[in-house]
Length: 229
View 1 (cartoon, rainbow, N blue to C red):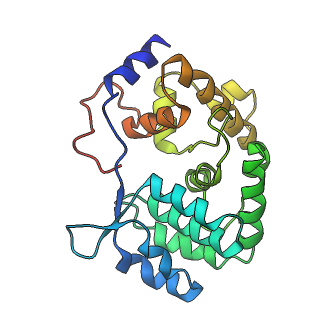
View 2 (cartoon, rainbow, N blue to C red):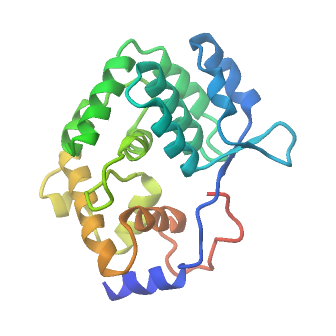
View 3 (cartoon, helix red, strand yellow):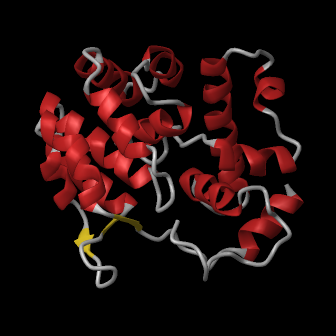
């Protein structure tokens, strides 16, 4: 815990930045499904021309607007995929199109939305199966739809970058969970982060982002000035 406290203190002034995306890249993948209007989320970039910025806060605003509406959940999912792609993941538009064309989408989004909001993260993980969408992205969906009170063990993102940082700290999900089953490993990860966070004076989602931000490079120079994460 001492090592974790030092990391939190060292990067206390780092802040998560909006993600830049190009609507022109995404539009051909979204228009056939009536979802191109999602590209208006966020704000326009000064440079480069035509680009936009989408933030985690934009996802919260959209979540609160769409509620339980099926089309709204689809729009929120698309926004999550755009935000989650960052500035370098050129495969995300194609993967998003694959998910939109999957006939299971309405049911998967509805059932996992309900499961997350009821606190059943293990169930949500077990039920999420969509073409083109792996753990790194569907846990972003879980985090985006979870509107429970802050004192709950709210859903968190678990991707390769977070894993890299956790492993450097000698924390391994299969070992902590006592099983190789991914739903249990994910639920254990969320519980562990919510246990650690107050001990070092931050929220669990702040700790999750810090691990993502560092990507396992715990002793390197502060990347805050050079990244758009």
